[in-house]
Amino acid sequence: MWNRKKAKEMDKEYRYNLRLQIQSIYGGKCVRCGETDPDVLTLHPIYTGLPERGWQLYRELLQQPVLRQFYNLLCMNCVMIAKLEKMNYFTEKTNERTVSYREKKQKICQLYDNRCSKCNKQFPYWIFTIDHPNGDGGTERHNRKITGMFNLPYEELVVRLNSGELRLCCPNCNMNYRESSKWITLAMSRMDNE
Ligand SMILES: [Zn+2]
Ligand SMILES: [Zn+2]
Picture (cartoon, protein in one colour):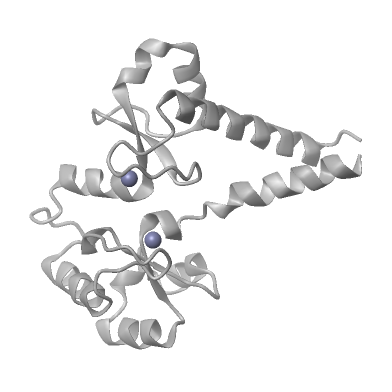
């Protein structure tokens, strides 16, 4: 039976397939580190000001091959590194990235040997994120009016990281990339039932 919910899922499936198609045109791996997990690969514009995301971008790249030269395929970790290199993380002072913020983040990452708790790989400290394995980070950030978990006090972060309530994660491991797997499983089970 066709209904709105199903139409939405089919649409997601179409977008996901389009994304995979574009990724394979770009060689299917991150140009910087070679990561091949399609769920963490994304297009990164080589000039600032170009559209950065959205499935319409994938459609345009499919239809207009001339546009492809303006993008690279990168994983989330390498996107973070590329962005921070561009904005000059170490000299620019934004709300979040004051000297004390950077020092706090650096100290915390050093406690964990600059290793991601999920993939166990080492990264430059500035790309790390904090994962809530048992909860909703978005709700906590909203309730405590913070833009990121590294805004919390150092002592609190250490206690919560040591207890396992929070985990230090690289962007590839922390992003909500299992969404796509969830609906693919759903779509497959639906097809089996029909
Ligand atoms: Zn990469
Ligand atoms: Zn990781």
